[in-house]
Image 1 (cartoon, rainbow, N blue to C red):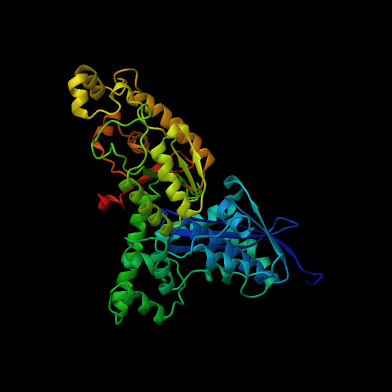
Image 2 (spheres, rainbow, N blue to C red):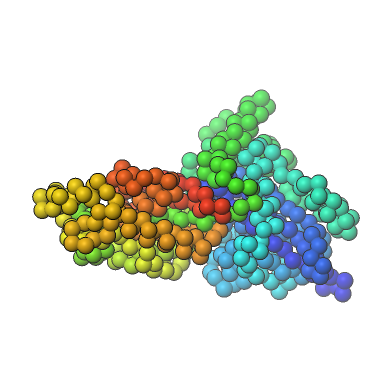
Length: 466
C-alpha cells in the first residue's frame, strides 16, 4: 500500500419487492475523512431475492471504491446482518447462491483491506434510497440515473478518479443468461421470461450480447431467431409485467420510495399431527401433540423449498411441540437457530380441545353458536376468544416488526394466529377467519413497511403432499 492510499466508507443495501421479486441495489462511496459522497451506484436487477440484491450492492460499492483507489482501505457499513456476519467470517455461508457472491466480494480488495460493520436501517438511508430508486425506475421500464444534484456532487469525484468512476453504476448487472440462471437458483418459479432477462427495457446492461439473449430465449423454450420487433415487444411486455408486479407486491402507493425494505414474515403452519386429519380442535390448552410421520415429511419438503429460495434470515416459532419440531427441521436445513415466541401460540379452545366440530355441536351447542356469531365469545370452559387472539397477535406483530425491520423471517405458528396475521394485514373483519382454509405446512407471507402499510402473498407449495 502506498502512502497516498485513501480511506473510504462504503454503504450498501439491496431490496426485493416480493422476495424473490423485482429487485435493486444501491451503494455509495464516502470519503472517510470528510464524509463527502464520491460515487453513487444503483441498478435494477430484475427478479432476485433480498440476499442477492444486498450482495450485489456490496459488490458495486467495493468495485466503485477500487475504481477510485485500488490501494485504499474500506470500511463497509450495511444493515444486512447476514452479509456483515458472513463477510466478517463469523457466520458460515451455507447457501449455494451466497457462496460465489461472498467469494467475489472478498476478491475486490486484498484480505485485511476491508472491514465490516452492521448499522440500523435508519442509518443506511442513502443506500436504501438508491436501491428503491433503482427498483422504481425498473418498474417504469427505465434505467436508474443520478439526480442533477447527485451528478453535481459526483463531478469532482469523477475528475479525481478518472474516466469510468461512474461506469460502475451499470457494471454489476448480470447479462440475460446469468439473470435466467440466477432467477432459477433463487426460486423464481413463476417469473415470466421477460421478467428475468430484460437488458434494455428494465435498466439492465445495454451491452448484453446476442449470445446471452439467445441463451435466455432458448432456455425458456422460445425461438432463438426472434426478430428485432419481437424483442422490442417482449421488452415492453416485460416492463409492463414488472410494473404490475411492483404495484401488486410492494408499491401500491402507500408511501415514498425511500421507506425502505419491509419486515417480511413468511408464515408457516406446522406439519400434520395425529389430530390434523381428524379435524379436531388442537389449541394451546390441549395435549400438545407432536408431528406425525406425514407432518415430518411435510416439514422436510418445506425446508428444502425454503433452502432453494435462500431468503430466510431468522426463524421464530410458537412454543408448542408441533411448531418447535417443524421449525427445528427447517432450521437444520437452513443452518439457523430457532427463537421461541410465546405470542405465536395457538388459541386456547378450552373444553373443546381434542373434539371434532360435530362433537362440540353435540355437547356445547349454545356456546358454539355464540362463538360463531361473535369474536368476543370464548370457547366453553374459559378458552380464548378470537378477539383476544387478535389483540395478542397484533402485539406480537408489532414486537417482531421492530425486531426484524428490513429482514425476512420465518414464523412457524398455527391456523388461528396465521389467519389473524393475514386478516389484520388485509383489514378484514373478524368473521373472515371462518372463510380461510389453511393446509398443514402451507406458506403465506406478509410484508410490513415503515409507513404501516402491509402487503399479503398467499402460496402453498406443500398441498400436493396430502
